[in-house]
Length: 297
Image (cartoon, rainbow, N blue to C red; front, side, top):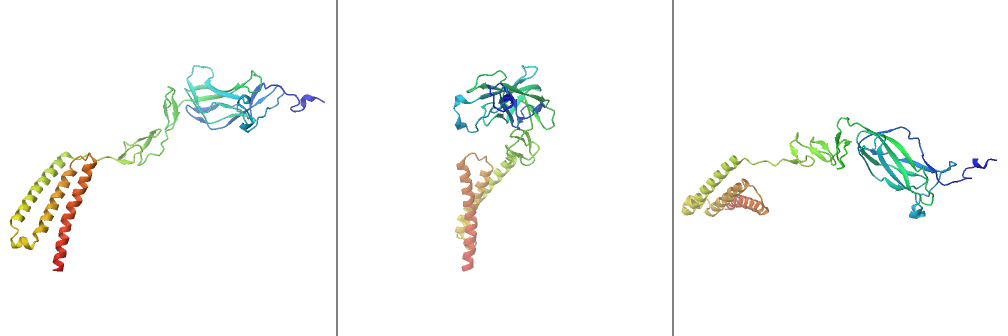
């Protein structure tokens, strides 16, 4: 009986790495894309025995773990600028060395993604301690994509901009979280804010002059009512209520003047609201009081 044909009857130190599936095809991506697929590799010895590891990290001490590092470099030209983002340093667990969700950035060309064992735990260091995948970064010619450096590494990424939250009111997402609102009637980060209306200075000046003129006329009316307060017509119209109504008109004219100003403080805003409400109350309060008095007479 050939003892070598019995699985795990002969075992040596680990000697090589092998992918658990056939990944012979070149991975074609754009610069900045993520590898969403999980890639898994296992460790074997000279007799093809696969080494197994516990899936419970608590079963190990740090010195027992097999650590790996993933690198990304040009296949024919190692001077090609490239960068790898994500968890590119980890350890083997649950019978294999796995990686996924890596983001690869580089200029268009052919690259190699290499997983290499850098910490051998309880085993002796072995030469065939790496495994490679071919990666091709394509030219960025996809409609709607942007080709620019988004990571500050002087390496351009090819990506479709994403705005979260989305641009409102038909705004266009022109870069990550940047909305173009130029073709809308809105502004703001996501085109959700209305433009602040600019006041017409000439119109404001006209309103200001008219309001001041009406204040002067109203003050003259108060003097007239006071001077002829004993007149039968003035008495019949209720002298006191007429004065209150005229004072209310003056407050309303002052309110209009304040509206023509650029409100730049919280206090002015409070005063404007107070004057408006007080003028309204004096005018209509007096009118209602006069009406009720006549009704009950």
